[in-house]
Image 1 (tube, rainbow, N blue to C red):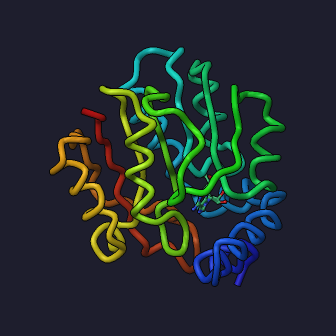
Image 2: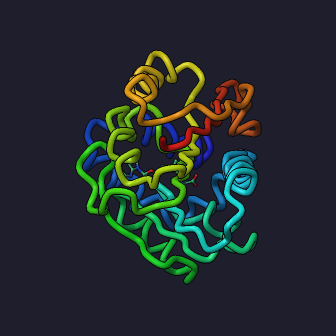
Length: 211
Ligand SMILES: C[S@@+](CC[C@H](N)C(=O)[O-])C[C@H]1O[C@@H](n2cnc3c(N)ncnc32)[C@H](O)[C@@H]1O
């Protein structure tokens, strides 16, 4: 198993949030290089979607599960000037901070209460974070709360996990309650096509709008 496959195995199998956070702290130094080897597709797809739905480059955009900031780096290049990030791992946040492109970076846990006022962000993006042993489906309620009316929630989730992980049910409940409106869903795609162990894995990218 290569280093990246070992790391992926570790994070998917983490026994607790603190073990997960510690593993990402340790992985932060080589995460970007490792994920490039897998052909990591999420950042390009999510940046394309944000650019499709959000034309105001001054919009305040939160990356939930910002990691080392690979998505933010692309958004910065595309001209987005009010980027914010949230993550549970201080090691990953430190790498994001070193890019010098964020207006704010926050330590926080998706699934718990978030330390932001309601209706703060014009858009929220999230890649690779709604997955096995990571952010729970319950996190969508808080993300919807901190999104402005009309704001976009753009995220990825494993195709199998959308149902089996309860993510679809949680989001559809918010739709049924008139909180979110469905906007767009991608066909399944391979987020890590060059990974030896994960190349079969398929993901969806989804777009919702705050009512
Ligand atoms: C696979 S990485 C993705 C990072 C970045 N979005 C990317 O695409 O490169 C998952 C990130 O989510 C963070 N994370 C996982 N579960 C979380 C949670 N419940 N709350 C906050 N951050 C979480 C991890 O610390 C890690 O930085």
